[in-house]
Length: 162
View 1 (tube, rainbow, N blue to C red):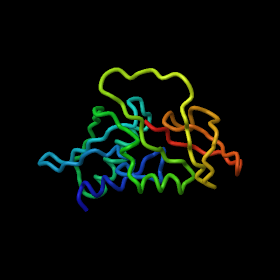
View 2 (view 1 turned 60 degrees about the vertical axis):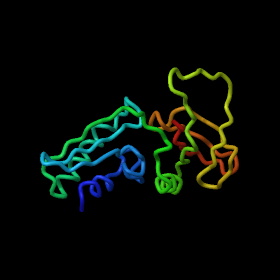
View 3 (view 1 turned 135 degrees about the vertical axis):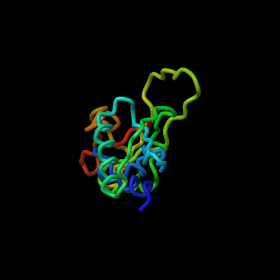
View 4 (view 1 turned 60 degrees about the horizontal axis):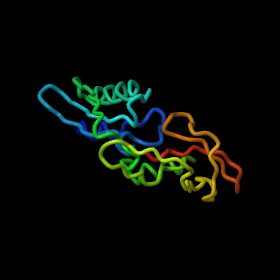
């Protein structure tokens, strides 16, 4: 297996049903004379899983025979949920986590503050009902929220659009 193929098999520690490649945080893998350099972009700059992700990548590469591997973090451009692959979204949905819709479009420069309630149609991953309700702005991680379906009454997490 190439180093890129090995790195693409590593799963996210907080969402183990998806790989780092499917999540869109695996940005580049380069084999050089000095070893392997993997570039990742965190889902947000304070992501507590980054240490575990780096260790998992290095361990997987060393196990596959790549003795010298290092992981570099790239913050720009900032990660967006638009980078999650369709297979990644399908795996989230199958695991009972509502995948994100399209990320809000941002213009260059300052981000405008928008007050009011935005239309948040998030389909229940269990029964498909679209008029679900938010229970908490944050779920198990800052990039997820807790929702409930009024039809099947089941709670579920939703990956927020970023």
